Image (tube, rainbow over all chains, first blue to last red; front, side, top):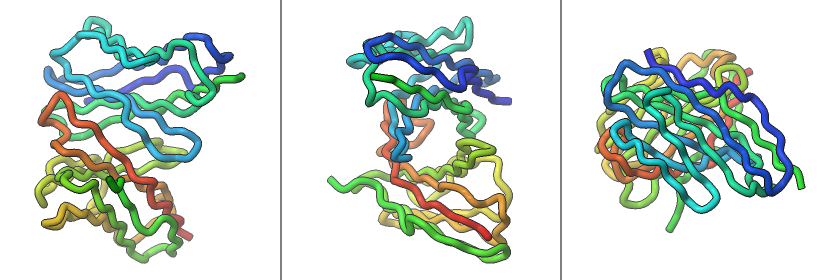
Length: 114
Length: 117
């Protein structure tokens, strides 16, 4: 079975604070792919990152960074120096090589206040 | 470069009817995947098409079906509509299949919002 858990339902921070969104996953597949998506108030999903299971290198893209740890089955997302435009719902997702089904977490609503 | 286009944007149907939604991917993209988003169930994956063949499928009943044409445009059909099918249906396009590469950015359309009365 595959499962993605985003335990944080809502997070509120003040602009310029750093914030980490947690994602914990479960899968029996040894090869799998992890994703993060952003859904701003407009509703359109925005793809942020895709990571495969045999590449545990952390990734940084501007103010965004991702920490992938297979030992704890986690793929956490950090926004540094948050901005109001980062306010959105963020989803973590998993696809197992043999499962053929993408599973999403429930999402974390991030509000960044000025 | 035109983005992913979904039509119609909004539609209202009644129980028992059927509906067809359309998705035109970015030019050159061969993978189209479909997702359902509801307040109760959240985001759920429906299926992925690549080169006119269904490659992956989520856990949905047979009332949900799709197809992809030779120009990569895709349609999704829901038959015998139920109240619970009311949702935002999103499609995404990509150059590569979901499971084929470590890269492969997904580009989403604005969605089709279906209301079943």
